[in-house]
Structure formats: structure tokens, C-alpha cells
Length: 389
Image (cartoon, rainbow, N blue to C red; front, side, top):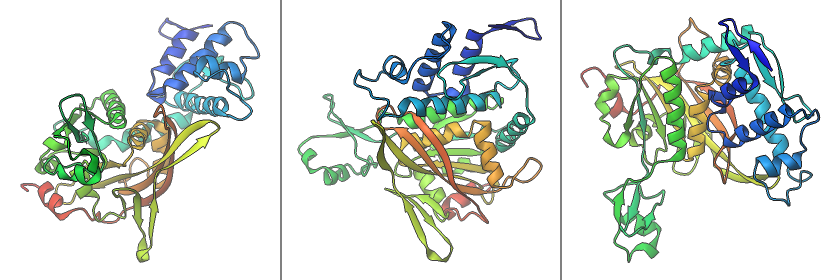
């Protein structure tokens, strides 16, 4: 199917599919892309009913011949996720396209229909731009601080990592955690990078560049705290490895500890959330918890965003969500915040479900959103962030 555009160009079904697959909404989702492409190609062949779940699972998703759709809902869950992302795409990036691609409920086929711009799409786009407006500084590039996990090596092909050992000056911590390694002569090394943090960086870089924002990416090991006086910043990672993130979250109601997310509620009540493993059909999944924080540092007034979790999948999920109109629209709606007002300082408890094997994001949910009064940030970093600090 081909549609004439206003500029005189032709938009084919293949062009439309390509725009969808390369959009922000389908970033880092190999399985969803494979399934959508398979359904499109089968539909283009003239099949009205579409393939069965077994065919999709074994031919598009790499499931074994023993796959049983009666006990494993992975195809239904995957296609539901694709439908949601298609709807979100045509409410945002694809809102101005003359055509839309749909998967009707109850059938595993793709249909191409005419598209129309909605008022909701314009509102959501406005909220997304507003959320990042302060980072559009023409003079100072915003900083995005990531971390490198500490490994130890014997320079003979062995690399060892333990989440309790993150200080290169204290390799004995590794031996305390793993006594069997005491006989090895290990040296600290930084040869690896969290896949979740990398994908979070890619999402943020791509989105910010589309807004004309050139961010400066920096390893937190090479960061000087005085630079917070000159830049808005996004800090992402685990507080076990990102010492500045650890300092900035001190005193805030929600924080990521060594093994959990903790919320200190009014009245002294404390709640905790830990990552957990579960299965959906035959697929092993991980329910991860993270904290998203946004506040202004006293003294400099610079905006800081913290994306904190002990699981890379949760960090990736939040980073991706902050580039999507529907996610930011949900967040600002919960805060009762709209363009023209001051963006509230807040913290959000976030649940992200990821595949245990492939690490792909299955779902993203804001579980709790709380506004902040005066952020109680580490006095050392606050002082350093003050002009002339």
C-alpha cells in the first residue's frame, strides 16, 4: 500500500514499518521488532487470518518445537506490548504521518489505515519538551554521569566481579567476599560497562540530540563535584559504584541501598522493595526496582536528575521512559504539573520488568510519585555546587 505525502513523496508500507522500527518507542526491543516484522511480512503475503501463536513463537521468537501456547502466553504478551508501543508511536513521533499500522485485537495480522493527528499527541509532546527545557542551555552542556563496574583480573583471561567490592584501593574486600580467590594475584581493572547503563545513555543521547541538546557524557570516576555549580546533570547507576549519586540521594525520602529500595515515610515508617525473580509461562523474568529523582541544588539552582538502581535493566527502562511522550505525560499528570508552571521537585518509585535471559524491557510502571519540599542533599555536594564552591 502506498500513500502520497504532501511533499509529493510516496510512503509505502515498508517505509512506514521502517519508521516504526527505528523510532524511540521500539529502541532496544529486538524481540518486539522481530515479531512485528514477521507479522507484517506474513500479512503482506495476503494471509487474512494471520499466523498462529505456535508459528510466531517458533519462527519469530526462537522458541523450541516443544513450545506450548496453552501453557506459555509469551506470544499474547508480546503482541500486546507491540500494540501499546504502536499506539504510543502514533500519538507522538508518528502523529503527523498519513498512515498508521495496527494489529487488531484477536488477530495476528497488521493493517495499514489512514492516520490523523490528535490533540492528545500535541499535549504529550509539549509536556516532554517542558520536562527537559532546563537542559536546553545554550552555554553549558548538561552532564550525564555514568559508572564503570570494578572488575579484578589476573591478566590471564580471568575477570572477576563482586558487587560488594567496588573500591580499587581495597581489593581485600573481594577476598573477604570470595575466600576461594585469595590464592590469586588479582589487579583492579575497568574493562566493562553495564549494558543497562549503556542503553540508557543511548536513549538519552538520541533524544537530547533531537532537541538540539549536546550532552557531555562523563565517567563518574573522573568527575569533580565542583562541576555541579556549572551544569545541569543526570546521574545514573548504582550508588554502590556512583559515589556522587550515593551522596546526592542521602537525606531524600526514597533511596537505593546496597540491596534494596528504601522509602522513609513520615512518622518513621520504613518500606523496602527488593528485586525478585518470577516466570510468565516458561519465560524467566526479573522484577526490578529503581528510584527516579529530580530536584534543584541549593546554591547553584542547577537541576539534577538521579536514575538509581542496582539493576541495569531498571536504569535502562527509566532512561528510555524519560524520552517518551506518554511516560512523561503520565509522570507530569501525577504531579499535577503542566507547562507554564514550575516543574515540581519529586521522587518516583519505579518498577521495571525485564527478561532474565535477554535483558529486554517487558514493562515500566510508576508505582509511587511524591513531591519534595526542600531537598535534603549532602551538605558537601551542596556546598560544592554553590557558586564559587
